[in-house]
Length: 371
Image (tube, rainbow, N blue to C red; front, side):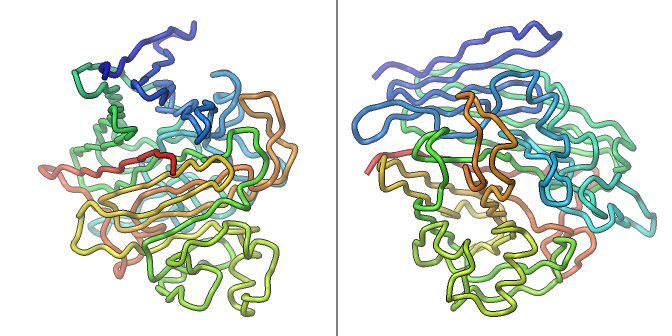
């Protein structure tokens, strides 16, 4: 088996290139160092036909113009963040407000009354410094970004390294490492949208999802967790039994009044599931998705305590993808491994505080197969 390869194509914009990681099984991952964006992931189906299986825009200019920008009709004016690395705090912070050591900090709100994915100019819009490496078993793209003290209101200078590694076992491994000069909060993730049938194949309603989580965090009317952890048993949030993503999106008979309210608030799924961690920061299976038509299967392992499942609730026809076709509602799903939303304001949630002298680290593995 030949070693994986990595190559670079400059985009014409200063400091930005498109990096292509490819293995000997026709798995190809394209990544911009602008925003650390996964532009596409391609993988063969059970017939050997290769197709892109992640959502994205046709060009870098499209990502710069539209990825973080509000779109008409999207939930609370949110952007889509196709494929991006998001931070310094992934997910929502209530009213953009947090307190550390008795000092209050304000992050710009950009999602209704809340701050989402690090505020108005998050890590998804930054140019990361790239470094490539190759070996006999894998290739890697390390991206580094230094977020200065006070950027988006956060305390401390945060230095973050995000490394994408592709091997011949069809695994894309994403590791984060971060250090700070002052007490701060950190929550990092990747925001790739998957459609295992193919990027332009329509909705993901028939794709089967398993989540290794017995509980989830319900949200209020502004999509901030209430602080409760509710059991998924007997609700449309129960993916401990592999279930079609679209089974309950239309308001099916399994809904209780409270479940219906949760899904109506988000126009579908946009919630944090509490993973069944055996011990803190252990690497566990978090999710598995399967497409019956292509027989492609995605397995996600992570050290994080939570996973945000987002069913791509934006309206159809407003966004055109890499194929040039418009994406319908539920054209893809995101599975964002991370800490819980609004943790800086919830002492009962796992802490996201990082202090000087400490090192933040997390690992997520995206494994592809055909069965």
